[in-house]
Amino acid sequence: MPTKKVVILDRDGVINADSDAFIKSPDEWVALPGSLEAIARLSQAGYRVAVATNQSGIGRGLFDMNALNAMHLKMHRMAAAVGGRIDAVFFCPHTADDHCECRKPKPGMLQMIIERFDVDPEHTPTVGDSLRDLQAGAALGCPIHLVLTGKGRKTLAAGGLPEGTRVHDDLRAFVLDFLADAQE
Ligand SMILES: [Mg+2]
Ligand SMILES: [Zn+2]
Picture 1: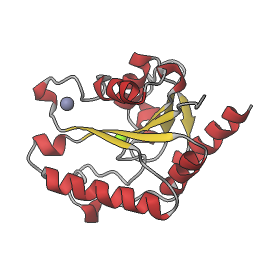
Picture 2: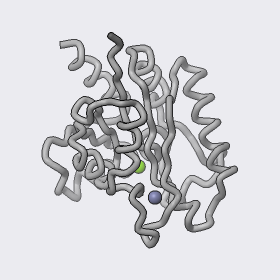
Picture 3: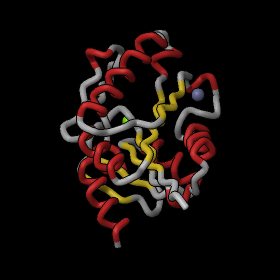
């Protein structure tokens, strides 16, 4: 029986460099060192990789769907070029004022991913650089992992992380730890 295995990743600050001015175009979308190779390791180990990303820049009118699609096409192509595969990208286009159910820390996007792939949350790790990524995962009972790229160091310094949060230098370090644990 095939094992369905999924890892949920935040995008900005985990896969690509984050910016307080938002990532608004494919040119501004720059992969963090080793992140795409880390995704490739997950793909090759049989994991599906799903991205869940707040993109309120759409709701704020800073960029449009064409730009977001172009960024994600670049992400998919660059991952594929190193042997990785991003199986799904879920995004929330809303601002906090919209009070939607998908914007993290709400768990709506993660819930959709878990339903789409029909997996157990307790076996579906969630990786992020912000508290709200961890809160969304914790709300569903996902194992939660903080990376220290992007806003990660600030997030760690601010404290108040959900119980059980594990901390890694970056996505590469997470993947190496995670795959080593999975083999035990
Ligand atoms: Mg982030
Ligand atoms: Zn939303």
